[in-house]
Image (cartoon, rainbow, N blue to C red; front, side, top):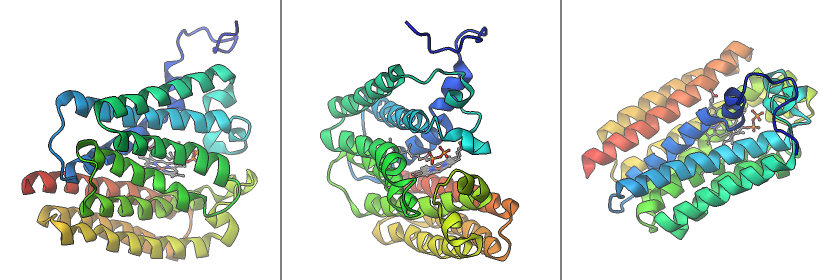
Length: 298
Ligand code: HEM
Ligand SMILES: CC(C)=CCC/C(C)=C/CC/C(C)=C/COP(=O)(O)OP(=O)(O)O
């Protein structure tokens, strides 16, 4: 039987390669997103075991979707400098169907555990999050249309709903508003990065917005979609979140809008990366403020 290690690997178990394969940093933020959904939902509190299952279920399903993305793109990732060091490209991990089995097993395990320990709705949303990233975005849309990330953006919304329904399948206005925030957040988050790596995406033939319409129009689109995002991020204030949430949403929103505005004036890589980092800070502030505020209110 073939080993999954390349023939010249002498350093034992390839921990670093596997950590990279599962895109764990993104998984941690997705999990935090689901926990924010749980916090703003109206349901009773979960038992410690249920909380653990929700956390691991979102983390593991996100990880398996990230691994699937790299498995599927193993023969195109070498076309972009940013992705050319990935383990299936470098040969650190050997590409083969055993990985598909492992990925599928992790998915079944995480969705099944959510179903058993939480409920069918939460399990469905965990599944949809991974499905939208792995299949809808990566397989169906990424190489076909610049709208890939608009539909792919639902992956983050499903994470919110997975958390919110974990305690109570009845969805209230605040989790739905937060799901909308994730939907509107993802395009400017990603398009900023796509401006920074426009040449990479063009070389790889991936029709990301800056490749299709140019950097200037992409920057304007980022600016206006950030305005829409920030406006939407205030909706939860009408449904029970208060001053703490306002401070998080306003300060994060101000930062993101400011960086998006600067990007319309100068579309060089530095401004694009500043806008991308602002997207991560804004999301963290919104989610953190939502969690803290909802705990104070209850
Ligand atoms: C289909 C939707 C999305 C796309 C296409 C996308 C795209 C990307 C890309 C290309 C990167 C750079 C990754 C790298 O260099 O390895 C990135 C980074 C990141 N994304 Fe997204 N993203 C999406 C949705 C999300 C969502 C929903 C979240 C969180 C709720 C998120 C959180 C992050 C974080 C935390 C990073 C930084 C990770 C790091 O430093 O390794 N992304 N995103
Ligand atoms: C509820 C749940 C499990 C949700 C999971 C959703 C999820 C994992 C979203 C992440 C999206 C993401 C990292 C895209 C990277 O784009 P890319 O793959 O095009 O980037 P690349 O060029 O770096 O490969």
